Picture 1 (spheres, rainbow, N blue to C red):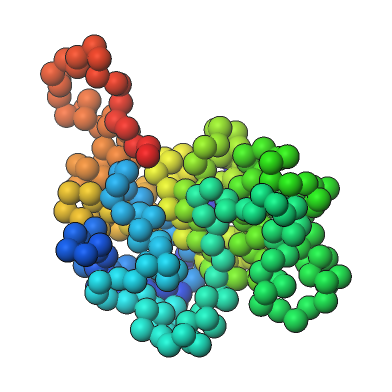
Picture 2: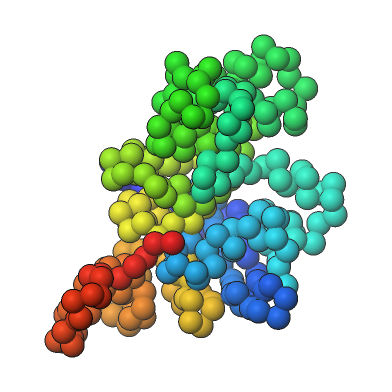
Length: 281
């Protein structure tokens, strides 16, 4: 597996989240979120189920509006931008949603070509050529005319990535890219993310709770805590785990609860209690 590249401390901020509070009516999901994603990072947003990871991503890409605070791209406020300025920023990033979000009535090449037809003035021949190149980039050469129902789950995810890359975005957002994949396909997807980061110099933001992926791809990350409803740790996952004063909740998450065994004996579990901590959902 390729080694994650290390981002220099002098790298400029590509994305800034400032004093962000996310709420549904009076219910606050997350509050006082502050972090920076540096250019070229593979940045992971992690936390237990229900902590607000995907909701944070939706606020970062404009699908939801925050109750307070703002998100900036290259120092320009996306949250407070007018519609024209926001559309320009939107064209600078691509998104792969958790289910891949492919249109079942379209072939793979038609799915990838759709953003090109909507946002460019290229000819049909040029659009098809670019779409075919994007599919080849994610290992789907020869599957251009297949429909989503005719391919595997791993191929579906790769096709979703190809469509997210259609407009050559500066930033890629992936929401739970490994969800539903077996370990082999999940690892292949991790490798692809690292290769895209290294070859295209794209800034990548990933929402995930899959530990193998987190340690394989993340150059930086934040941990969302479901109880305090804010960020309780920042940095690379390895740094988080190695800190002597690491928050116990972060340590348990990053070790699947194994660190608890080192802290002394625990009461015997009841037979019906599932083994291990449930990190899915």
